[in-house]
Image 1 (spheres, one colour):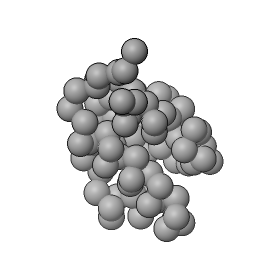
Image 2 (cartoon, rainbow, N blue to C red):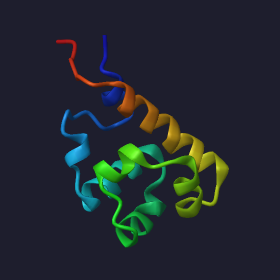
Image 3 (cartoon, rainbow, N blue to C red):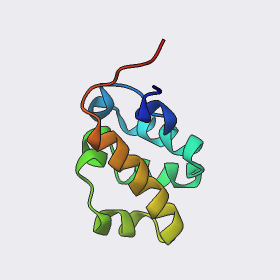
Length: 87
């Protein structure tokens, strides 16, 4: 079974420890790289992403489709407490 977090491009038990730049890099595989500078400007870290609400995302990302894509990926990250990979 493939790790769900690996499928969204973020496979690390230390996700909440990601700094602003690492969070910015995570956006690119999701097709959301254009929001990187916005994440830097607003100091969005892994810890912030973990608790970010839909209203917070609305302020950063005006396009509904983009918010839904990131929100779905965040749901996967939040639901996985331990990352176990198939060999």
